Image 1 (spheres, rainbow, N blue to C red):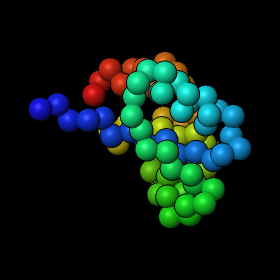
Image 2 (cartoon, rainbow, N blue to C red):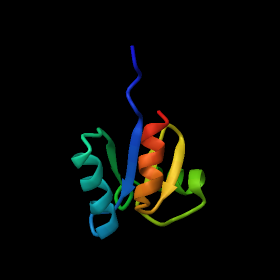
Image 3 (tube, rainbow, N blue to C red):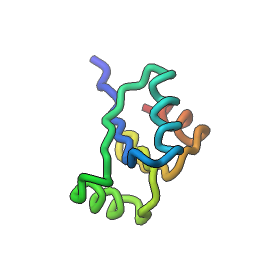
Length: 81
């Protein structure tokens, strides 16, 4: 049985690029966990620890971090899982 892609989107509600990433994934029919780092300080700490960056959005696809709305990198990573 194929394992589901483990996708997390670290975002804030007031970030336009965060909304763009989530809309992009929804249009592709990709399930993801939306993590609001403006209210979840522990998730924010883990996000910074993983990427070294405080910027959002950050997309985690099977343990690979993509910082920002890099559509090509997201597409590439979705194909590799």
